[in-house]
Length: 205
Image 1: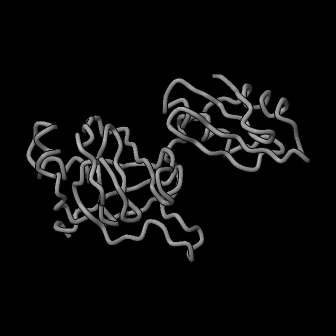
Image 2: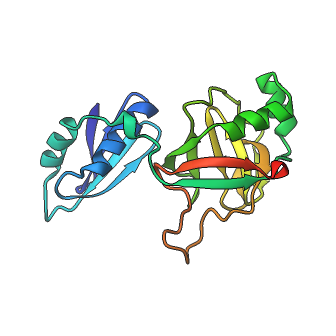
């Protein structure tokens, strides 16, 4: 663990891998150190934001170092079901890369319970991981200039849903009409760190 100041009111905690990030994040949000107002996970870091009127960075750094990660709490948030039409432009290619048929890829994707490890790239985009998804899907060699809103995709060990039309290099396996981000909704993002996700095959309903 390496702690670095991020400006004058936050600490950036650098960790070895995503599992360490998730364990520390789960512990911190369950029992926030005094004066901490926000905790933001990423792939290998946790940003701890403080209120300088209530604490100091040194005090928070001490609290963070004393925190015991809560790996058993990972993915313990609310469960969101996302209906998917599995007709993505890269479905067959992604299945080929995994050495299986498209139907088997869909079965694996829908049988896994996913959880939001962290958010980024675009408002409402959650990077989803699963303890039972052990596949590594390479990104496209050439990213698309435009990925449609609601595209369900795979890259590396992650799955995700594009909340809006944007460029992207993930493999597109399906699409959903579920709204990932709505500024008029509270909370605006459907998927937040810790949220559990089940993908449901629309053709199987």
